[in-house]
Image (cartoon, rainbow, N blue to C red; front, side):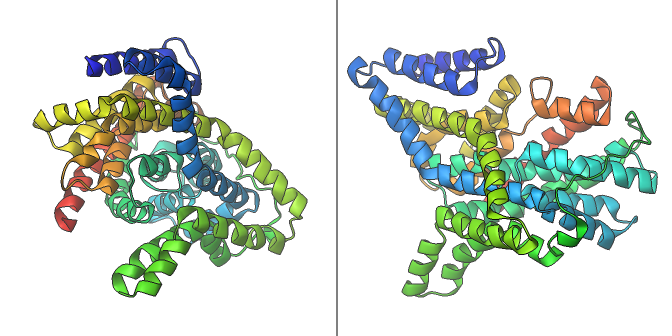
Length: 439
Protein backbone atom coordinates (compact mmCIF):
# COMPACT_ATOMS: atom_id res chain seq x y z
CA UNK A 1 0.00 0.00 0.00
CA UNK A 2 2.81 2.41 0.89
CA UNK A 3 4.42 1.93 -2.53
CA UNK A 4 1.10 2.72 -4.23
CA UNK A 5 0.82 5.91 -2.16
CA UNK A 6 4.37 6.88 -3.09
CA UNK A 7 3.75 6.13 -6.78
CA UNK A 8 0.59 8.27 -6.72
CA UNK A 9 2.53 11.11 -5.08
CA UNK A 10 5.27 10.95 -7.73
CA UNK A 11 2.66 10.97 -10.50
CA UNK A 12 1.06 13.99 -8.83
CA UNK A 13 4.50 15.62 -8.65
CA UNK A 14 4.97 15.10 -12.39
CA UNK A 15 1.50 16.51 -13.11
CA UNK A 16 2.14 19.58 -10.98
CA UNK A 17 5.30 20.39 -12.92
CA UNK A 18 4.09 19.51 -16.42
CA UNK A 19 0.32 20.08 -16.42
CA UNK A 20 -0.22 22.80 -13.82
CA UNK A 21 3.16 24.50 -14.44
CA UNK A 22 3.90 24.73 -10.72
CA UNK A 23 7.43 25.60 -9.70
CA UNK A 24 9.32 22.32 -8.99
CA UNK A 25 10.38 23.46 -5.50
CA UNK A 26 6.80 24.18 -4.45
CA UNK A 27 5.68 20.91 -6.07
CA UNK A 28 8.27 18.94 -4.08
CA UNK A 29 7.16 20.51 -0.78
CA UNK A 30 3.46 19.88 -1.49
CA UNK A 31 4.12 16.25 -2.40
CA UNK A 32 6.39 15.75 0.63
CA UNK A 33 3.60 16.94 2.95
CA UNK A 34 0.94 14.85 1.20
CA UNK A 35 3.16 11.76 1.17
CA UNK A 36 3.85 12.18 4.88
CA UNK A 37 0.14 12.46 5.66
CA UNK A 38 -0.91 9.44 3.59
CA UNK A 39 2.03 7.35 4.85
CA UNK A 40 0.91 7.91 8.43
CA UNK A 41 3.49 10.34 9.80
CA UNK A 42 2.22 12.29 12.84
CA UNK A 43 0.81 15.66 11.80
CA UNK A 44 2.56 17.31 14.73
CA UNK A 45 6.02 16.34 13.45
CA UNK A 46 5.41 16.31 9.69
CA UNK A 47 6.57 19.86 9.04
CA UNK A 48 9.71 19.26 11.13
CA UNK A 49 10.47 16.18 9.01
CA UNK A 50 10.10 18.18 5.80
CA UNK A 51 12.27 20.98 7.20
CA UNK A 52 14.93 18.52 8.37
CA UNK A 53 15.13 16.89 4.95
CA UNK A 54 15.47 20.26 3.24
CA UNK A 55 18.09 21.45 5.74
CA UNK A 56 20.16 18.27 5.65
CA UNK A 57 20.27 18.31 1.86
CA UNK A 58 21.14 21.98 1.48
CA UNK A 59 23.57 21.91 4.39
CA UNK A 60 25.84 19.45 2.63
CA UNK A 61 25.91 20.80 -0.93
CA UNK A 62 24.97 24.50 -0.86
CA UNK A 63 28.55 25.69 -0.41
CA UNK A 64 29.82 23.45 -3.20
CA UNK A 65 27.22 24.57 -5.73
CA UNK A 66 27.50 28.26 -4.84
CA UNK A 67 31.30 28.22 -5.00
CA UNK A 68 31.09 26.30 -8.28
CA UNK A 69 28.70 28.71 -9.93
CA UNK A 70 30.85 31.68 -8.83
CA UNK A 71 33.89 30.06 -10.44
CA UNK A 72 31.88 29.48 -13.62
CA UNK A 73 30.71 33.09 -13.69
CA UNK A 74 34.25 34.41 -13.30
CA UNK A 75 35.49 32.00 -15.98
CA UNK A 76 33.09 33.69 -18.41
CA UNK A 77 33.41 37.32 -17.32
CA UNK A 78 37.22 37.21 -17.20
CA UNK A 79 37.42 35.90 -20.76
CA UNK A 80 39.06 32.63 -19.61
CA UNK A 81 36.40 30.53 -21.34
CA UNK A 82 37.03 32.39 -24.61
CA UNK A 83 40.79 31.95 -24.26
CA UNK A 84 40.34 28.19 -23.80
CA UNK A 85 37.98 27.94 -26.77
CA UNK A 86 40.11 30.00 -29.16
CA UNK A 87 43.37 28.27 -28.19
CA UNK A 88 41.98 24.76 -28.69
CA UNK A 89 40.42 25.75 -32.01
CA UNK A 90 43.75 27.21 -33.12
CA UNK A 91 45.51 23.95 -32.27
CA UNK A 92 43.07 21.69 -34.10
CA UNK A 93 42.58 23.73 -37.29
CA UNK A 94 40.05 22.90 -40.01
CA UNK A 95 40.85 19.19 -40.32
CA UNK A 96 39.96 18.37 -36.72
CA UNK A 97 37.62 21.27 -36.09
CA UNK A 98 34.80 19.10 -34.64
CA UNK A 99 37.26 17.40 -32.29
CA UNK A 100 38.40 20.84 -31.16
CA UNK A 101 34.82 21.93 -30.52
CA UNK A 102 34.14 18.71 -28.60
CA UNK A 103 37.19 19.16 -26.36
CA UNK A 104 36.30 22.82 -25.84
CA UNK A 105 32.76 21.89 -24.82
CA UNK A 106 34.01 19.29 -22.36
CA UNK A 107 36.62 21.53 -20.70
CA UNK A 108 34.45 24.65 -20.56
CA UNK A 109 31.39 22.59 -19.59
CA UNK A 110 32.91 21.26 -16.36
CA UNK A 111 32.89 24.57 -14.44
CA UNK A 112 29.86 26.10 -16.23
CA UNK A 113 26.17 25.31 -15.89
CA UNK A 114 24.71 23.84 -19.07
CA UNK A 115 22.64 26.83 -20.16
CA UNK A 116 25.55 29.23 -19.59
CA UNK A 117 27.94 27.00 -21.54
CA UNK A 118 25.40 26.68 -24.34
CA UNK A 119 24.89 30.42 -24.73
CA UNK A 120 28.62 31.08 -24.44
CA UNK A 121 29.78 28.53 -27.01
CA UNK A 122 27.08 28.71 -29.69
CA UNK A 123 28.58 31.93 -31.12
CA UNK A 124 31.89 30.06 -31.50
CA UNK A 125 30.09 27.41 -33.55
CA UNK A 126 28.57 30.08 -35.78
CA UNK A 127 31.94 31.73 -36.32
CA UNK A 128 33.66 28.43 -37.17
CA UNK A 129 30.79 27.45 -39.49
CA UNK A 130 31.18 30.72 -41.39
CA UNK A 131 34.98 30.49 -41.51
CA UNK A 132 35.14 26.92 -42.85
CA UNK A 133 31.81 26.93 -44.76
CA UNK A 134 30.49 23.93 -42.77
CA UNK A 135 26.92 23.13 -41.57
CA UNK A 136 26.21 24.48 -38.10
CA UNK A 137 24.41 21.43 -36.70
CA UNK A 138 27.21 19.19 -37.97
CA UNK A 139 29.66 21.28 -35.93
CA UNK A 140 27.39 21.83 -32.94
CA UNK A 141 26.53 18.26 -31.93
CA UNK A 142 30.05 17.23 -30.73
CA UNK A 143 30.31 20.33 -28.55
CA UNK A 144 26.76 20.11 -27.17
CA UNK A 145 27.20 16.39 -26.43
CA UNK A 146 30.21 17.33 -24.31
CA UNK A 147 28.23 19.98 -22.43
CA UNK A 148 25.39 17.52 -21.83
CA UNK A 149 27.68 14.79 -20.52
CA UNK A 150 29.40 17.22 -18.14
CA UNK A 151 25.98 18.37 -16.90
CA UNK A 152 24.73 14.85 -16.20
CA UNK A 153 27.87 13.02 -15.05
CA UNK A 154 30.43 15.35 -13.54
CA UNK A 155 30.67 17.22 -10.24
CA UNK A 156 30.49 20.10 -9.40
CA UNK A 157 27.30 20.26 -11.51
CA UNK A 158 24.18 20.35 -9.28
CA UNK A 159 22.67 17.00 -10.24
CA UNK A 160 25.80 14.81 -9.78
CA UNK A 161 26.62 16.71 -6.57
CA UNK A 162 23.12 16.21 -5.13
CA UNK A 163 23.01 12.56 -6.20
CA UNK A 164 26.42 11.93 -4.62
CA UNK A 165 25.14 13.42 -1.38
CA UNK A 166 21.87 11.48 -1.36
CA UNK A 167 23.56 8.16 -2.17
CA UNK A 168 26.65 8.73 0.03
CA UNK A 169 28.99 8.46 -2.94
CA UNK A 170 32.62 9.64 -3.04
CA UNK A 171 32.56 12.84 -5.14
CA UNK A 172 36.19 12.38 -6.20
CA UNK A 173 35.52 8.86 -7.50
CA UNK A 174 32.28 9.99 -9.16
CA UNK A 175 34.33 12.60 -11.01
CA UNK A 176 37.03 10.11 -12.04
CA UNK A 177 34.54 7.43 -13.11
CA UNK A 178 32.44 10.11 -14.81
CA UNK A 179 35.37 11.29 -16.93
CA UNK A 180 36.20 7.69 -17.89
CA UNK A 181 32.62 7.17 -19.06
CA UNK A 182 32.28 10.60 -20.64
CA UNK A 183 35.18 10.33 -23.10
CA UNK A 184 33.92 7.34 -25.15
CA UNK A 185 30.33 8.58 -24.83
CA UNK A 186 31.00 11.96 -26.44
CA UNK A 187 33.26 10.41 -29.08
CA UNK A 188 30.36 8.25 -30.27
CA UNK A 189 27.29 10.39 -29.50
CA UNK A 190 29.02 13.59 -30.52
CA UNK A 191 31.84 13.11 -33.01
CA UNK A 192 30.69 9.96 -34.84
CA UNK A 193 26.95 10.71 -34.76
CA UNK A 194 27.43 14.20 -36.20
CA UNK A 195 28.69 12.60 -39.43
CA UNK A 196 25.09 11.76 -40.37
CA UNK A 197 23.89 15.34 -39.78
CA UNK A 198 25.70 17.15 -42.59
CA UNK A 199 22.48 17.66 -44.55
CA UNK A 200 20.46 19.20 -41.71
CA UNK A 201 19.92 22.85 -42.55
CA UNK A 202 19.78 25.73 -40.13
CA UNK A 203 18.55 29.23 -40.85
CA UNK A 204 20.69 32.36 -41.28
CA UNK A 205 23.69 30.46 -42.60
CA UNK A 206 25.74 33.62 -43.02
CA UNK A 207 25.03 35.05 -39.59
CA UNK A 208 27.97 35.45 -37.24
CA UNK A 209 27.37 36.08 -33.56
CA UNK A 210 30.58 37.31 -31.92
CA UNK A 211 31.73 35.60 -28.77
CA UNK A 212 30.88 37.95 -25.95
CA UNK A 213 33.46 38.94 -23.37
CA UNK A 214 33.55 41.62 -20.74
CA UNK A 215 37.29 42.19 -20.97
CA UNK A 216 39.73 43.36 -23.61
CA UNK A 217 42.01 40.84 -25.25
CA UNK A 218 45.01 42.43 -23.52
CA UNK A 219 43.59 41.87 -20.04
CA UNK A 220 42.46 38.29 -20.60
CA UNK A 221 44.34 35.54 -18.72
CA UNK A 222 46.70 33.18 -20.51
CA UNK A 223 45.57 29.75 -21.65
CA UNK A 224 47.57 28.03 -18.89
CA UNK A 225 46.10 30.25 -16.17
CA UNK A 226 42.60 29.83 -17.65
CA UNK A 227 42.81 26.03 -17.63
CA UNK A 228 44.48 25.76 -14.23
CA UNK A 229 42.04 28.16 -12.57
CA UNK A 230 38.74 26.98 -14.06
CA UNK A 231 39.56 23.28 -13.67
CA UNK A 232 41.28 23.46 -10.27
CA UNK A 233 38.30 21.69 -8.61
CA UNK A 234 38.76 18.78 -11.04
CA UNK A 235 42.49 18.58 -10.42
CA UNK A 236 42.05 18.92 -6.67
CA UNK A 237 39.33 16.26 -6.32
CA UNK A 238 41.20 13.85 -8.60
CA UNK A 239 44.55 14.19 -6.82
CA UNK A 240 43.13 13.92 -3.31
CA UNK A 241 41.13 10.83 -4.35
CA UNK A 242 43.99 9.01 -6.10
CA UNK A 243 46.97 9.97 -3.92
CA UNK A 244 45.93 7.89 -0.85
CA UNK A 245 45.49 4.87 -3.15
CA UNK A 246 49.02 5.25 -4.52
CA UNK A 247 50.79 6.50 -1.38
CA UNK A 248 49.78 4.23 1.51
CA UNK A 249 50.42 6.56 4.44
CA UNK A 250 48.06 7.44 7.28
CA UNK A 251 49.11 11.11 7.41
CA UNK A 252 48.72 11.47 3.65
CA UNK A 253 45.24 9.95 3.87
CA UNK A 254 44.21 12.35 6.64
CA UNK A 255 45.54 15.38 4.76
CA UNK A 256 43.90 14.32 1.50
CA UNK A 257 40.62 13.61 3.26
CA UNK A 258 40.68 17.07 4.88
CA UNK A 259 41.77 19.08 1.85
CA UNK A 260 39.82 16.84 -0.50
CA UNK A 261 36.50 17.61 1.16
CA UNK A 262 34.47 19.09 -1.75
CA UNK A 263 33.58 22.24 0.20
CA UNK A 264 37.26 22.91 1.01
CA UNK A 265 38.39 22.18 -2.56
CA UNK A 266 35.73 24.49 -3.99
CA UNK A 267 36.61 27.27 -1.51
CA UNK A 268 40.31 27.00 -2.36
CA UNK A 269 39.39 27.05 -6.05
CA UNK A 270 37.26 30.15 -5.56
CA UNK A 271 40.07 31.96 -3.74
CA UNK A 272 42.54 31.05 -6.50
CA UNK A 273 40.14 32.13 -9.26
CA UNK A 274 39.36 35.38 -7.47
CA UNK A 275 43.02 36.29 -7.82
CA UNK A 276 44.04 34.66 -11.12
CA UNK A 277 40.86 35.45 -13.09
CA UNK A 278 39.97 38.62 -11.23
CA UNK A 279 42.48 40.75 -9.35
CA UNK A 280 45.45 39.63 -11.47
CA UNK A 281 43.87 40.85 -14.72
CA UNK A 282 42.76 44.16 -13.30
CA UNK A 283 39.25 43.51 -11.94
CA UNK A 284 38.36 45.31 -8.74
CA UNK A 285 37.05 43.34 -5.78
CA UNK A 286 33.75 45.23 -6.10
CA UNK A 287 33.29 44.02 -9.69
CA UNK A 288 34.26 40.46 -8.78
CA UNK A 289 31.77 40.39 -5.91
CA UNK A 290 29.08 41.77 -8.22
CA UNK A 291 29.75 38.83 -10.58
CA UNK A 292 29.42 36.44 -7.66
CA UNK A 293 26.13 38.03 -6.58
CA UNK A 294 24.69 37.50 -10.07
CA UNK A 295 25.91 33.90 -10.10
CA UNK A 296 24.30 33.13 -6.74
CA UNK A 297 20.97 34.59 -7.90
CA UNK A 298 21.09 32.35 -10.97
CA UNK A 299 21.56 29.19 -8.90
CA UNK A 300 19.09 29.99 -6.09
CA UNK A 301 16.13 28.20 -7.70
CA UNK A 302 18.20 25.10 -8.45
CA UNK A 303 19.23 24.93 -4.80
CA UNK A 304 15.62 25.18 -3.66
CA UNK A 305 14.59 22.35 -5.99
CA UNK A 306 17.38 20.17 -4.60
CA UNK A 307 16.24 21.05 -1.08
CA UNK A 308 12.68 20.08 -1.95
CA UNK A 309 13.92 16.68 -3.13
CA UNK A 310 15.66 16.31 0.22
CA UNK A 311 12.32 16.82 1.98
CA UNK A 312 10.71 14.00 0.00
CA UNK A 313 13.67 11.74 0.73
CA UNK A 314 13.37 12.39 4.48
CA UNK A 315 9.63 11.62 4.46
CA UNK A 316 10.35 8.32 2.72
CA UNK A 317 13.03 7.38 5.23
CA UNK A 318 11.02 8.30 8.33
CA UNK A 319 7.80 6.64 7.10
CA UNK A 320 9.56 3.33 6.43
CA UNK A 321 8.49 3.17 2.78
CA UNK A 322 12.17 2.95 1.83
CA UNK A 323 12.46 -0.44 3.52
CA UNK A 324 9.33 -1.62 1.72
CA UNK A 325 10.91 -0.58 -1.58
CA UNK A 326 14.02 -2.60 -0.72
CA UNK A 327 11.97 -5.73 -0.20
CA UNK A 328 10.24 -5.26 -3.56
CA UNK A 329 13.39 -4.36 -5.49
CA UNK A 330 15.17 -7.49 -4.32
CA UNK A 331 12.42 -9.54 -6.00
CA UNK A 332 12.73 -7.75 -9.37
CA UNK A 333 14.96 -9.60 -11.82
CA UNK A 334 16.74 -6.53 -13.20
CA UNK A 335 20.16 -5.12 -12.39
CA UNK A 336 19.96 -2.18 -9.94
CA UNK A 337 21.99 0.10 -12.24
CA UNK A 338 19.67 -0.61 -15.15
CA UNK A 339 16.63 -0.09 -12.92
CA UNK A 340 18.02 3.26 -11.77
CA UNK A 341 18.69 4.31 -15.36
CA UNK A 342 15.22 3.24 -16.50
CA UNK A 343 13.34 5.08 -13.75
CA UNK A 344 15.38 8.25 -14.29
CA UNK A 345 14.78 8.03 -18.05
CA UNK A 346 11.01 7.66 -17.63
CA UNK A 347 10.82 10.62 -15.25
CA UNK A 348 13.04 12.72 -17.53
CA UNK A 349 10.76 11.99 -20.51
CA UNK A 350 7.75 12.93 -18.38
CA UNK A 351 8.91 16.21 -16.84
CA UNK A 352 11.81 17.36 -19.05
CA UNK A 353 14.19 18.39 -16.26
CA UNK A 354 17.33 16.28 -15.96
CA UNK A 355 18.08 17.58 -12.47
CA UNK A 356 14.57 16.90 -11.14
CA UNK A 357 14.53 13.44 -12.77
CA UNK A 358 17.81 12.52 -11.10
CA UNK A 359 16.73 13.76 -7.67
CA UNK A 360 13.35 12.02 -7.80
CA UNK A 361 14.99 8.74 -8.84
CA UNK A 362 17.62 8.93 -6.11
CA UNK A 363 14.98 9.53 -3.46
CA UNK A 364 13.09 6.42 -4.56
CA UNK A 365 16.13 4.20 -5.03
CA UNK A 366 18.10 5.15 -1.92
CA UNK A 367 17.35 1.70 -0.41
CA UNK A 368 19.29 0.11 -3.28
CA UNK A 369 22.46 0.95 -1.38
CA UNK A 370 21.54 -1.74 1.13
CA UNK A 371 22.01 -4.36 -1.57
CA UNK A 372 25.37 -6.06 -1.17
CA UNK A 373 28.07 -5.19 -3.68
CA UNK A 374 26.42 -2.06 -5.10
CA UNK A 375 28.79 0.81 -5.87
CA UNK A 376 27.12 4.16 -4.99
CA UNK A 377 29.48 5.99 -7.36
CA UNK A 378 28.28 3.95 -10.33
CA UNK A 379 24.68 4.28 -9.15
CA UNK A 380 25.08 8.09 -9.33
CA UNK A 381 26.31 7.77 -12.93
CA UNK A 382 23.52 5.33 -13.84
CA UNK A 383 20.91 7.82 -12.66
CA UNK A 384 22.79 10.66 -14.35
CA UNK A 385 22.75 8.79 -17.65
CA UNK A 386 19.04 8.07 -17.37
CA UNK A 387 18.27 11.70 -16.55
CA UNK A 388 19.61 12.78 -19.97
CA UNK A 389 17.32 10.49 -21.98
CA UNK A 390 15.20 11.71 -24.88
CA UNK A 391 15.10 15.50 -24.55
CA UNK A 392 11.95 16.67 -26.34
CA UNK A 393 9.35 19.45 -26.30
CA UNK A 394 9.07 19.67 -22.49
CA UNK A 395 12.81 20.35 -22.10
CA UNK A 396 14.08 23.96 -22.39
CA UNK A 397 17.28 22.63 -23.97
CA UNK A 398 15.27 21.29 -26.91
CA UNK A 399 13.90 24.76 -27.67
CA UNK A 400 17.23 26.48 -27.10
CA UNK A 401 18.77 24.25 -29.76
CA UNK A 402 15.87 24.72 -32.17
CA UNK A 403 15.77 28.51 -31.85
CA UNK A 404 19.51 29.15 -31.88
CA UNK A 405 20.09 26.97 -34.92
CA UNK A 406 16.71 27.73 -36.50
CA UNK A 407 16.01 24.09 -37.33
CA UNK A 408 12.63 22.49 -37.95
CA UNK A 409 10.94 20.43 -35.24
CA UNK A 410 11.65 17.29 -37.26
CA UNK A 411 15.35 18.10 -37.66
CA UNK A 412 15.62 19.03 -33.98
CA UNK A 413 14.35 15.57 -33.08
CA UNK A 414 16.71 13.95 -35.60
CA UNK A 415 19.74 15.78 -34.24
CA UNK A 416 19.31 17.06 -30.67
CA UNK A 417 16.90 14.44 -29.30
CA UNK A 418 18.78 11.52 -30.86
CA UNK A 419 22.10 12.88 -29.56
CA UNK A 420 20.74 13.18 -26.00
CA UNK A 421 19.28 9.67 -26.20
CA UNK A 422 22.60 8.27 -27.44
CA UNK A 423 24.42 9.96 -24.56
CA UNK A 424 21.98 8.32 -22.13
CA UNK A 425 22.15 4.81 -23.63
CA UNK A 426 25.93 4.88 -24.08
CA UNK A 427 26.30 6.21 -20.55
CA UNK A 428 24.61 3.19 -18.95
CA UNK A 429 26.49 0.80 -21.27
CA UNK A 430 29.83 2.23 -20.18
CA UNK A 431 28.71 2.12 -16.52
CA UNK A 432 28.34 -1.65 -16.88
CA UNK A 433 31.68 -1.93 -18.67
CA UNK A 434 33.40 0.09 -15.93
CA UNK A 435 31.63 -1.99 -13.27
CA UNK A 436 33.00 -5.16 -14.91
CA UNK A 437 36.55 -3.71 -14.96
CA UNK A 438 36.75 -2.39 -11.38
CA UNK A 439 34.76 -5.06 -9.54
